[in-house]
Length: 316
Image 1 (cartoon, helix red, strand yellow):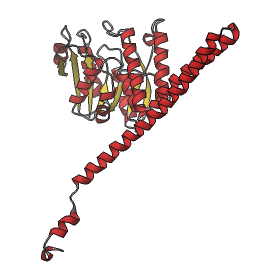
Image 2 (cartoon, one colour):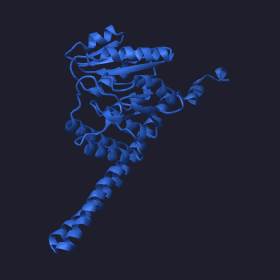
Image 3 (tube, helix red, strand yellow):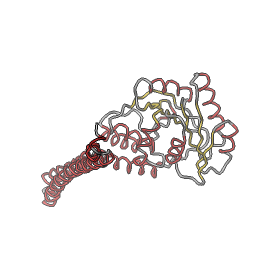
Image 4 (cartoon, helix red, strand yellow):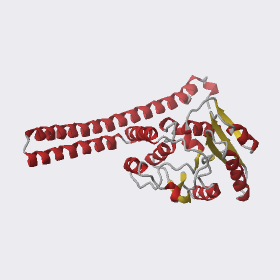
């Protein structure tokens, strides 16, 4: 049993083909019970009507809320525990979903399609930004990540819903979801897939969406592992201080020495702030655990007191 969630915004030219292909693949693979949910994200074309005619269950946003927000609505409305997501533009090989599902059943918490093909090659404009984001995501997760934001993946519904407060509402949803899984010790697997030319025009805005991705990477670091965030900033400040000392030694200008000393002091202070952040997190976790235990103990009836209040003849 699986729910396939497809977010769509002005994808009237391709959504019918996508839904039909999903249904065909599910039936050929003999998946059993399945449903196809299309979240129409305030489209101005016939996306919703075409999806309904193709046999999908339609969820309509009154206006455009974003890729991530649409996925959250679809995942929340799904009736089955296993979720598969894909895009509506025919870029992902839908026929590989059964393989992702088989990997998921091997014990992974989430299985992601690792994109490969000429249509996934970075342009000269995207390459530097993608490499920076990839470095930051891998630094935050503490492991190599073959594809940080693939939109074809299979995962558990309840686990993902628990991370909704820490995932992005826009195109960075998949990146932030990957981080949430990995930084909580969950098993994430990758399966190489082909990546095709999209039908229609891309909705991604490189600069805007890259900044939002960077925002959620920093938020994930600060929330799940604050020491890593402060250590990275401290390392940058320390490297800047060493550079200033080097320039001062070569150029013989005292101002660079002053910048170097200031940079070292800031690096040490930043590292100390990281230690304080870790301590604060531990205190909050301990306080939350104590509050939970207290609420559980208050919910339990005091059996001894009840027995003591009984008449002598009624005691057993």
